[in-house]
Length: 366
Figure (spheres, rainbow, N blue to C red):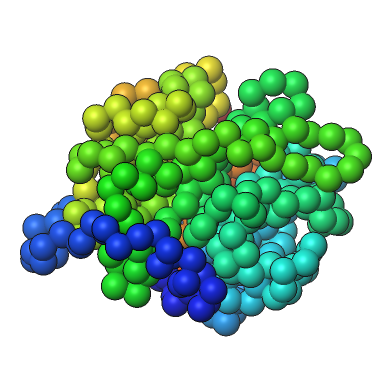
């Protein structure tokens, strides 16, 4: 993931973290801190790749099912401060939403994105908030976290009660963003911010700050964090650690925010998007992005986290975000994996093609 310079206001905010900081680890050879660069077990042809615009710098993805039985693929565009909407079956570009600014319906460096029902939640790094909009017209419904988020990136949602959600947002603030100096160890327990969100049919959508978490030990610390995804069936959060100075990986946390003491083997490059392919109560696979050229997509057993194979596309590279949609569409009756490609476009893989290529077996597959 490329992390461009923050605005002056954002840098000033980061420097308020204090003088006692955690210095970067001592310099060591890259080969000693990154994982091996494996040959993929299979190459899967992309079902489609959209036209691209490098000026937009696409990042994260979410899927919304339309009333007509299809789906929209919604991407955040960091450099143009917009959302870009694609048809999920064809990759055809449908529209853009928003533009630069701080008001409702405007964005400043949008990054993480998630859809819940007919609401889309957009993390804005440089507005230090989560903006909520209603679908299909993208009408603004409210802001969350503007008083507590510093440099937010990733997002995950789960339902905790009728008309109530828990919203988790990763917050990768630094003591000095330019040099990569981390905050004091005592502040590393603020890496994931938790909000309670009440869903109302009318009026603004608001969120109550419910605290934060993050392990402060060397083994479980979240030094540079973006992507996060959860699995309530196994009381699990997988959180991407992107700091290559210690080796990029996924850390295994409980839903309450406790580090289990386990991290996956180091990735060859940055650990980026995380998606759960779940099709029964507790079966399925995790798919994680290893941001290389070509991108490696690493699969793990949902319950045990045992490796289940690695595939690459024919073209897709340097992937940030991904979104898995298993409900099915006319083009993808058993679902699809949608991914960002090279900061400029989006692409789709048919889940049936992935399953055949990696010889996957399970109730996810018809």
